[in-house]
Image (cartoon, rainbow, N blue to C red; front, side, top):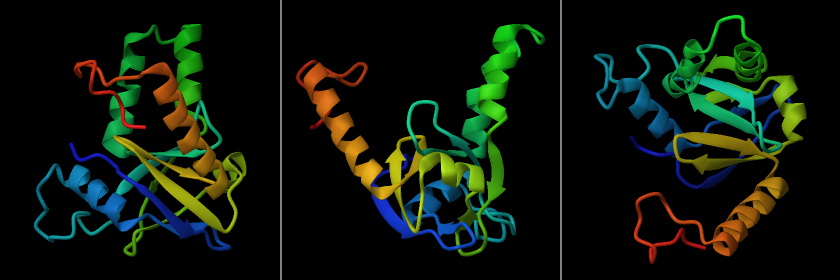
Length: 171
């Protein structure tokens, strides 16, 4: 599965529209197509690519999930007792503030006002690739978060699971 890579900055217009960076659109297209282009050749079956946006549980940013990945994230909820407190709490945490949307033909999305306010976004936003998802940040907060992640990874000697000890996460 192709990961979301890199950092990209784009303008958020007065209507809350922002263009998803071209490299991220390519990943979304690949994931939606299952690696194969549909008959019309545009990767969207005539529509845009489907995303789920939600506030991050850990940071003041917006998480953007390809629809299939969000469904996979939420699938374990079905293993919890339907009316249990744990199921209710997790279901609300995942779904109550989530927004399903689709990119337009130009690859733009409209960020809901609630998510714009949650992440403190204004006229410029930074997209950060995070592997299977991407995040949308206020630019200065994104810089701080990247530096914090790099420093914490270095200080704690984080390694990738299964990697030899000498192959630490780059700092």
